[in-house]
Image 1 (cartoon, one colour):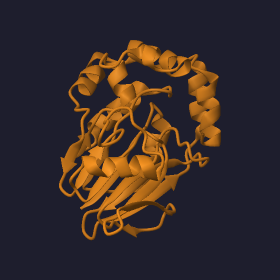
Image 2 (cartoon, helix red, strand yellow; image 1 turned 45 degrees about the vertical axis):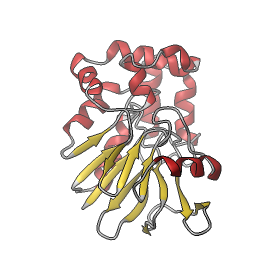
Image 3 (spheres, one colour; image 1 turned 180 degrees about the horizontal axis):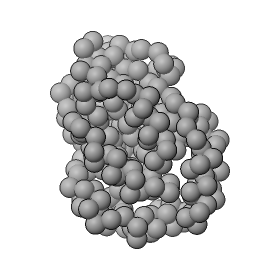
Image 4 (tube, one colour; image 1 turned 120 degrees about the horizontal axis):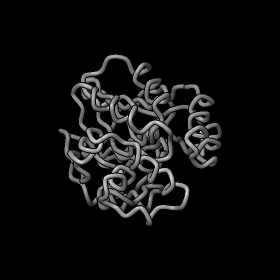
Amino acid sequence: MRILVISDIHANYTALEAVLKDAGTVDETWCLGDMVGYGPDPNAVVEEIREIPNLTCILGNHDMAVIGKIPLDVFNGDARRTLEYHEKVLTASNMDFLRSLPSNLKVCGAVSIVHGSPRDSVWEYILNTLSARLNFDHFTTPWCFVGHSHLQCMFQLNINSDRVSLAPIQAGDHYPLRPRAIVNPGSVGQPRDRDPRAAYAIYETDGHIWEPRRVEYDIAEVQERIRAAGLPEKHAIRLAEGW
């Protein structure tokens, strides 16, 4: 099977459309959460996600906040301001869809999927080999796909030496996954690795091949909508710079 793996769309409809077009035909789509937050298009993004066939979707921390499962005051001021806006404009049916989704780690065949990390599905960022090593003890499948950090990366555990390495990966290349690994497809709507292109991945179950991808989209158009909605200027600026 050919599976589209996306995460951290953050209400950026233009980036999501670019990713869906670039990915082409897939058998399934796995969304690792954070459909809302930061961006100007929460309804358009959630409605697009809802229409995707053969979808497996879990909640991120921003999604949980907008449906009242996390208090807004735990977010920084800019993030909270946008979530308050999203809370007001999201339709009842889109809110109901978000409420229907799980927030905990979910096993899909040989892969565990989660938003934050296996040991803290909502909040923990896996940013380095130490945090990755601590998390290998919290899932039993060969591989775990995570989001949350907005960084396209792969942590590989050497079973013999019990050491974790940050494997070098490049968009467009194909990587046979070896047990065990924690892999992040990056962020569709707000990359933070200094590459502003929308990030995602294709996972081929035959041979367990991981293909990280990047695609350009009209960033200026999204920035205009952020400003038109009166959202924080920071959220517009960072899109062009990938931070």
